[in-house]
Length: 178
Image (tube, rainbow, N blue to C red; front, side, top):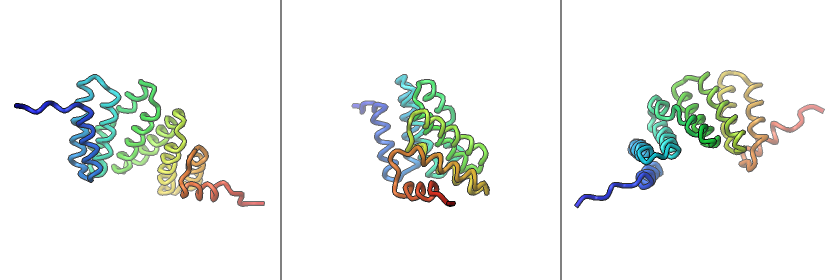
């Protein structure tokens, strides 16, 4: 007797379990199988979500070229469906892969697009995280003014700032001159 074919959701659950266990190679493979299963089931949004998860797992391996290849285009799938939150997350994942590949200008552009999509989705806390990453990029390039503006912009929209973000807000928004 043969075992029943697992559902796309069962494959996705197994992929998440592998990721949580720290087996990133196996998780990446399982996320790929889940993406294919969701695509076969005509669920492009979940297929794109699984590709984004696969990207994150591949970045942890690290295999940034493979991560970038798998995530490219997923932001369009989400954007066409009107899901700006997941489009922003897909762009942030692309930016992370580009960053790992040392393609800094492209990473900065993806972070900017991600922040814009997250702002449109009214996701202030996620946008704040993306703007913090963008700020770090600017700092590394010696663009201190741009770094401060990016950080301020992100923190201004944070609805539930972390203790660290609250500290940054106090520092960045206090009056330095009288």
